[in-house]
Image (cartoon, rainbow, N blue to C red; front, side, top):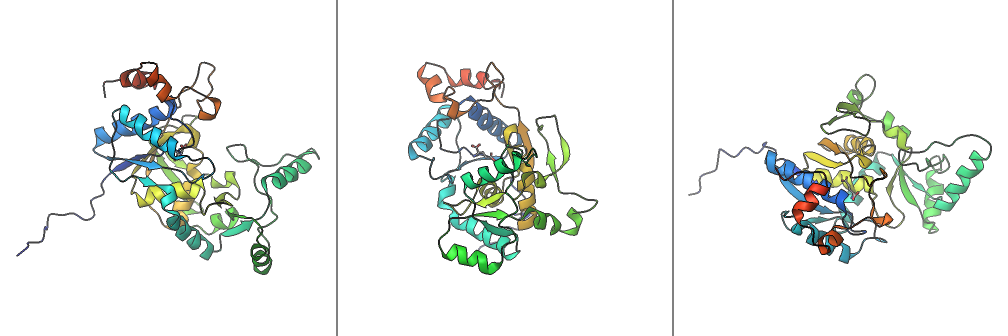
Length: 312
Ligand code: GLU
């Protein structure tokens, strides 16, 4: 006879962190810093270290970059439970989240192309007025499609007009649960630091993003949606990532609230910068880990260059 294990505590939450690179290029020192900070945090706190490949940008993601990422991380001495999560294998999870938001009446199809949007903003700015921009500098989506009737939306979609899906930010904010509006705003616990030293209980400001894209024209997800859904599905308890993603947390916090998902703790970390103070980026051709490796550098050298020491 089997005896039930009464000591098992089903409410026990196993801590987990994740490193979530996009396979659009080779990893550089900035990625190494993020991966290593996650790794050390996991080792020190007993959390699981998970890898997630964020490849929803199907036009830029390449299998050879994914292979190179795995190789670089293993070379640094990291390992992770297999199989790891690859976002492009899970579009149904994002579709389900979109369906929920649609049911709440918070999504609308947005038909403007990038060029049309740019023209719209230019025409406005030529009159000497400013146009609101999100924290990444992208213009807010104008109020052109939000108010279309259901019949008009359906007609245009049925006619095959390309469209993304955007969040109706104003409705999303007014539809928040009562404890998250009014005197108790949407907050998160920051245990790292925002770019201006923000720490502690922070108030999210999703409105700064305007009507964000939650599903792109080509895929049923966007960065904001996929990252929020995945952090919940992978039961991530602490999100450790660069300060370049700090402002995005406001959107993630809002989506968690709308979708009824748990909120992890956030630890944003400073970025590795080049001598001129510019943040490293693959597209600017910054030195890849693979290149440093080929030059004879050791993992210990990279750990130091990424701003961590070997004490850990
Ligand atoms: N995939 C994102 C990147 O490579 C990271 C996402 C995140 O950590 O939230 O920048």
